[in-house]
Length: 183
Figure 1 (tube, rainbow, N blue to C red):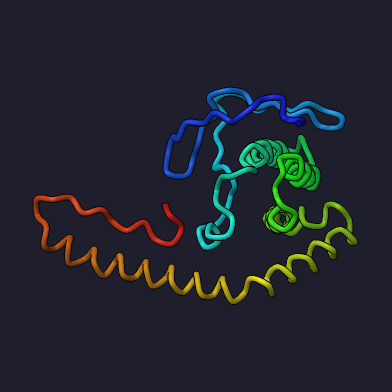
Figure 2: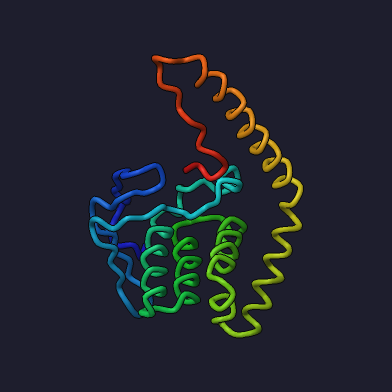
């Protein structure tokens, strides 16, 4: 296993941020990457609408933390986003993540790299990713519509119940709904 460290040790620092308690070390083909103690991550950057399909953590957590580091380095101009995404896919394979989930997550991070980053691997790579992304979208369109509608309904009901509770309770604290993003 190319990760030279075992389980990832994390401490939750906010609703969506985690901090490494121990370094995470990965030996790639040519380089060794170390994610330092204290590094902050959101684990797998999955939009709320998709967490029913891909939770924010799982077998791929170490790959997601490494990917967060490599993306920050890519943003600083120290690393290629295309390479970061490729390492993400490879590390998920090495961690035993299933084929479909692995490729779905890879397509998502390729789309998340932005328009310029999307074409970093060349036109053929970009077109292949675009076709794969369209196939994923077609496959998940109906479940996404259903889940999205139910999340909107739930969010609306939270607000509908929040307002009378807030008005009625003078001494008790009533938690404000978080909304669709979870923040």
